Length: 244
Ligand SMILES: Nc1ccn([C@@H]2O[C@H](COP(=O)(O)OP(=O)(O)OP(=O)(O)O)[C@@H](O)[C@H]2O)c(=O)n1
Ligand SMILES: C[C@](O)(CO)[C@H](O)COP(=O)(O)O
Image 1: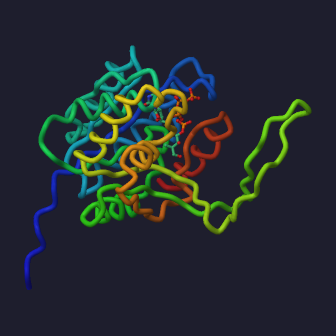
Image 2: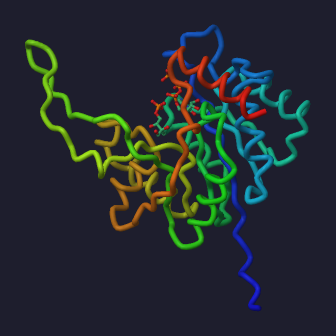
């Protein structure tokens, strides 16, 4: 049997630079405890346990890096190599992560700290897809009908109802060859119009600035939810307890 080629170094990046305005707690939502540990610890633990992840980089909200360093030390998360201060936007946090990664080519999985229920299968599939694709993301079909809204003086109206069978709800991880996501970010930050329509994810930056790069979809998981609003804390806590 021919041995498979060595896998490139794969870095899991935990994006935790946000302050959680929509949850509205006294601390960034990633520090809130669910099912016995902070949300961010569940997320770090998911990467730590994944055999495909060699290294973990954490981007943490300003003023809270020391708390994460303590949590990492106490939990014995040996793959975490650095806890770096995040930026003012998710995009800026990604940019700082890319700057912290150094010159050597590798594969990188960018993941929201507030998706603590990341299943091992999704990590495995994203990493495997990076063997043949330079950009990948986890995504799931939409079970709701999604409409395009138009603002009018009398309130919002439906402008379009896109074909639901072609719509996907994008999750993280989003995986890239480092050189590709770096190039997309360099082009984005060189574009004075980039800030006019802020990117809500990293694949959007690649699609906009490197449209020739196909972005492969990997099946996500309904449980890989994002803790965004207060109600999500209740749902995530229940799911995390059930997963124990
Ligand atoms: N400046 C930022 C903003 C967001 N994120 C991270 O990106 C993920 C998704 O962002 P979101 O759910 O919007 O988190 P917040 O920005 O904290 O929430 P809000 O928009 O309600 O303030 C989170 O893990 C968040 O910490 C980040 O790394 N840096
Ligand atoms: C990256 C993301 O999780 C994909 O669904 C999402 O776009 C993040 O959005 P947020 O408003 O920063 O939570």
